[in-house]
Length: 137
Image 1 (tube, rainbow, N blue to C red):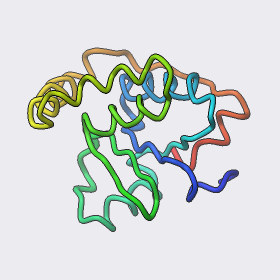
Image 2 (spheres, one colour):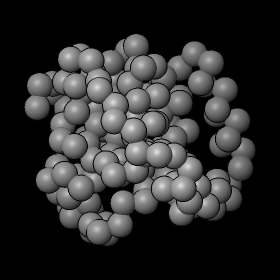
Image 3 (tube, helix red, strand yellow):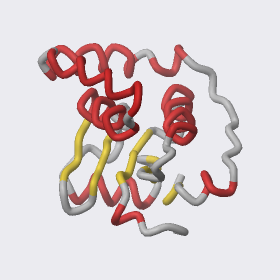
């Protein structure tokens, strides 16, 4: 671990999912304020996060956003918060908050169930600065 993750927002993702890896890359490229770090749910760090919260340690179909000692968000709430933190034009995604989380999460679940069909697994090579943002993959 190269950076102090306790002062960052941690994005937990399915390390074996092409769609998830696409979104990690998307966030990395827009994280101009250096707010995020990343860990796969399959990693020891990810498994500890899930275990400490009594969450399922064998299903990796949910993206989590964790701000240590403050909160963790799941599914559509995590996506909306990430967009808000990125700021700029992405703040417009706050319009998604007008929909009940139950509806947003249903859409999230449909995409999640089909995510392996939506994107091929790609080998992404992060820059050294981006690589330092990964706690464990």
